[in-house]
Structures are given as C-alpha cells and as structure tokens.
Length: 88
Image 1 (spheres, helix red, strand yellow):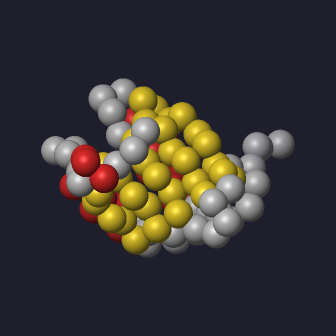
Image 2 (cartoon, rainbow, N blue to C red):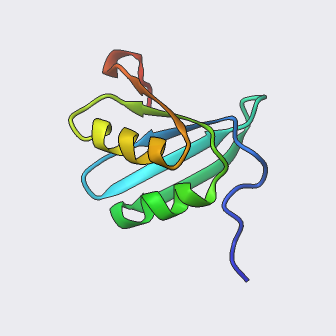
Image 3 (cartoon, rainbow, N blue to C red):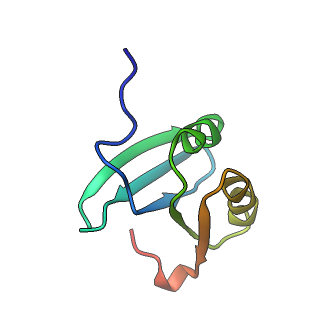
C-alpha cells in the first residue's frame, strides 16, 4: 500500500529548490505542518501532480521561474518570494 502524501489538505506549500534535493513543507489553514517531503529533482512534478491545486511559495532565483511554470501547468497558484522575505 502506498504511503499518503499528506495527512490533511495543505492550504500553502513552501518549496525550497536546490541543485539536487528539494524540500517541500505544507501547512494547513492553522499553520500546522501536514506535509514534509524531501524530493529528488525527478520526483517534484509527479508528487505535485498528485496534490490538489494549492498555493506554492518558492524563493525567487534563476531556476524558480522554470519550476513556477511547471507547477502552474499542474493547476497550482505559484508565488515567487524575494530572498530577503524567505525564511529557512
């Protein structure tokens, strides 16, 4: 049996993109973590394709525009966040 991706529905997902490993963190409407997943580059789009459309925040950088377009094509609402406003 396959492990569920989320415990409940996330209202927002933060995606930390890097060279090889991406980390996604989903929060519900109360700010409680419902999703924390480390993804390799090849697993990002299949994983987000399984999720219902939601808001996704990505720190703005050179590669973030590519990922924003790909996630928007899956129906997600993607926001690019300036580096000074992103937090770890």
